[in-house]
Image (cartoon, rainbow, N blue to C red; front, side, top):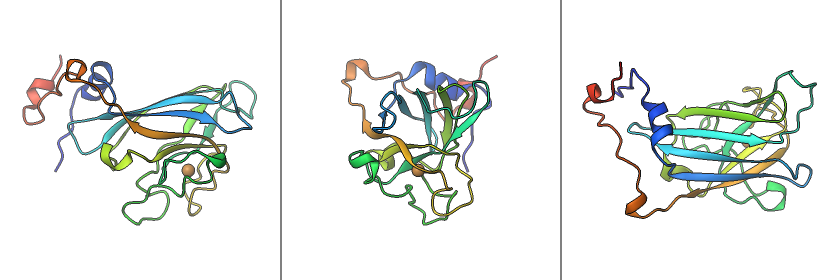
Length: 185
Ligand SMILES: [Cu+2]
């Protein structure tokens, strides 16, 4: 059984630690201005914290009206050929959509900009290195197999590890076994 923090441990991780892996996301030839960064942070728990920030998404609705974009981790870290080589959703447990290991909440944008932090307990840093982050041009309906009818792959980024010397190692996490040490007033 996993004991999760009652206070702001995940926000503290985002504030005080560097990511363990990063994907520099870029649009396809139809969306040359679309770009962004997805950062993956280790946690003291099973999963990873994901922080995604994307610019120049193709908003199809008038400004101020929300648009959602399918957002997944795909099997292959190969963004060549209009992202046709990225394969399906990462699916380490052999489950149907939307229970793939790589299934994530959709991105929300009202004017082409999206920012999202999400905790994904089903993922670990070693599992995602060398995979790809994919943004689709439609919302994921979380029903249709195998990919939620989320449309074209409009942006892609390969998940790569961040290597750093000891001098720049982030501070260690608060101990999981002493929850009082992560409490805040
Ligand atoms: Cu996808």
